[in-house]
Image (tube, rainbow, N blue to C red):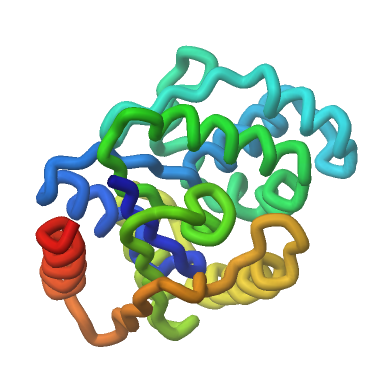
Length: 218
């Protein structure tokens, strides 16, 4: 069974998706981490973010490993490194690259083969897994999402400016929605959950009930 969780940046998808997977006994696929890995690889190799061909080649050759909450790029753990503002600021050309997206979607489908999976991203229910049994769309206001991102970075020991985070997030939202390949949108058969004012526990409880309900009907 595939459970997709899509939504804009800062909607709390990653953290609640991980916990949902644990609660229902599924594997967790963090697709955002995959794009962040390619972005980090480009930065480390000093590849111009305007060089679409070079970026595509890096995506094809990069070795990304996802195990629980651990992310490895070419054998090195980069779980925290990929979450820095520097990577976030640079991710747009990578996420907009058609070859990169095709490569990542192929990797996602391969990773999910033969598994019960909770997967989160922007295009999981619309592009990567259009036939998923359960499609969820998590969202919240821009201000709420920016505050959450600031708290997350501070917990990682990274200085974060609210206005800068909000501005970057708004820019990313606009790009995600306008993207030709894998743009952010709600699948016709998706269930939308607004998370403003809800604790992570409350959101998790809601999602668990939905997934278990679909399982029982299946």
